[in-house]
Image 1 (cartoon, rainbow, N blue to C red):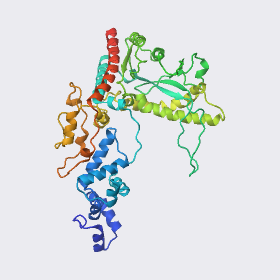
Image 2: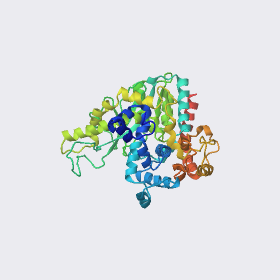
Image 3: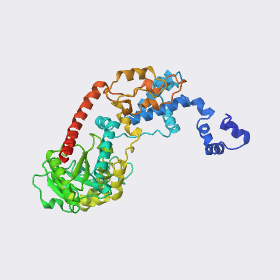
Image 4: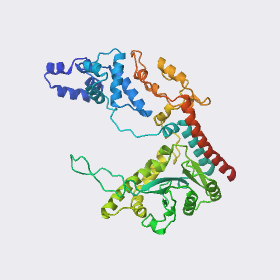
Length: 475
């Protein structure tokens, strides 16, 4: 009770004759005493910011990370110094000298707020970040819902098809080696290696069809498939990538699933130009295959193969290549060895659990249009039109000027807008200045948005026209 009334741990420990460490643990066990144990009077006297100001800064850093613009430690320390000066807080002399917060403050700041950590970000293209938005995802799920109702689809009749690259050179993984050595070497066949394209085919109940392999050669030979998974179909293309082989792959799919016009199946695939052709559409119409293309640059979140299958496949494939190198010392791997190595890794990656998890996490099977939360669309904030009605009660002059300067397509409604990152900031009239005023969230200009949106919509319009032509021919 004495600690809750405001006395320090030292005073209470000396008064009652107990150890400070024991008193600390006792207070920490109580849920109400966590804040007191974290911010005692002694620690509060050494804080640069108040608790409310630090919470404001934490929310700003988390939101900046979610929209794809995380801050490094140097920028955070510089922002902290500017924020302290703007709010009139007292700062140490080394802050004034270096014009940024100290290293000890950064360490203590992270220890006080465990939701922050130093991470290595993953490079994400602007096209991928801006294309995955509520409008594109909602359009895709609306078409999928209509196909569910129209064809009475069941999980075993929903397929996903996609390609991935298999190289003749593995990517080294972490190994056990001598400590303190500057460089640890691992032998590989080639520095880059040749690429063989594999087409994976899975369905909603966890089954997978034999894959298709496209070799970088002019003429196909049967010995190229030695050791491949049973039933694998092989093709050849000088580039090693799939271009016009999609029709032959559709033959391969139809041969195994025996679909007809009366018993149709749904095939979901990305919107690459090689997948949508007149020959492919005609073949699908005559054999009961319904094609549904994913929105542009959204396959990383909407495609089951990309979500849960290809990553384990690459990991198992790398491990299989390492074993092959150990069993064949001094020998270089060629494209003729790819099929055999794939045969070892294929069954370990294309499991029922991985496949069904991919369909479930994307909301395709079972159909779940609410599988993605608001935070999943934060990265599209850079190009989306800001909502007309701000959810923040107090809007700063900087935010008002920024919102007034950015215009979007006139037909976009406020319902399509993602939540404004500024809404995550808890309004507090005591604060003089917030981090967002000093360093506003980046927002694309109208010119940038229209140029990129036009390219995306033109490309998507071509595939939408192909789908409409397919529906008209089927009717």
